[in-house]
Length: 397
Ligand SMILES: Cc1cc2nc3c(=O)[nH]c(=O)nc-3n(C[C@H](O)[C@H](O)[C@H](O)COP(=O)(O)OP(=O)(O)OC[C@H]3O[C@@H](n4cnc5c(N)ncnc54)[C@H](O)[C@@H]3O)c2cc1C
Image 1 (tube, rainbow, N blue to C red):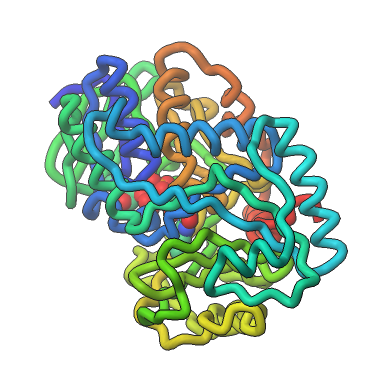
Image 2 (cartoon, rainbow, N blue to C red; image 1 turned 180 degrees about the vertical axis):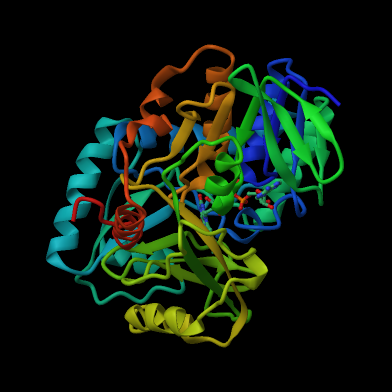
């Protein structure tokens, strides 16, 4: 079997890259050792966030929102996107000051947002009963995809429609090198020749890069969320809420409320060994109970009985930015990783940008190249990755 491009991993990042390469006229094969979307991508909260910490990520986030809401037009496959908007809420003076900085920055980068009074928040969000002392920002551009599998299915259908072959339940066991550059991959079932191989293996990115002698600075860190039983306290037309001082996000889901967040002292995985597959990753509902407790006063529905508790691994990078581009010292090997908690939503723009870069036009995302990190010890990688996780909502902290 031969192709122009082999993509390893059928998660959001791999499928988006494959789709955009196929749209550019390349022959593409995607290989996944499990099924498409079976790992982090199928377990995401599905949230898109226009407010980001720098102009590049803001541009990527907004581009992704634009591509998500017009998916049917350019990819030819329908995709349901809930245009709910979101409130960012701060309950401490320090976090209010932080949100004001974000407001100023984001507006400068073109984001549509404005301050909202506590009364407005209470009037527009049935599940949030504020104290009246909050500072809030209304972000009308923000959207969510209710079931993350819908985006995976849409990517799959669109990629196949444009000629991409997707091989599931087939592990890549080797990346072949010939004359000092990538020549293709070996799977459990076949050899596939290709001058370009994209490592989009999520939490297993490092192990896949290592098959070709490459190194990528990403550290897997656990992330979890819960969806409560359906309840009339939660209007399903409500917007997303992010309580930044508690690092908690909330949205309507399946008739109930989705509650997720970023705990201090999260669970990282050893970067020297392959992390577990997602179904074997230990979940800890205590983390979510503690996070929900931080907003219980304002959001009583966060204490409803849990209907679903799920989790997976983020790939955290030392600077909190995506890791996208050519892997140093392995010509022909590219990477799409370093999701830092936004890989699902940003996949639409990242796959597009990576396909253009592979085609010869790096653009602004050249700043995300994996070679930007110098040599790093495993300890430093994990420590920095954990710091980024803990400061997801306040990276200026
Ligand atoms: C609970 C939770 C909530 C989240 N919420 C959001 C959110 O609201 N918004 C957002 O933007 N992001 C969110 N994320 C992050 C988002 O899910 C990830 O950033 C994104 O899904 C990563 O996609 P990926 O393609 O890199 O990885 P994955 O989806 O994990 O895909 C990687 C694939 O590689 C395959 N693979 C690995 N090794 C091999 C091999 N040797 N051979 C073949 N295949 C291989 C795996 O089987 C897997 O399917 C959340 C994550 C979690 C866990």
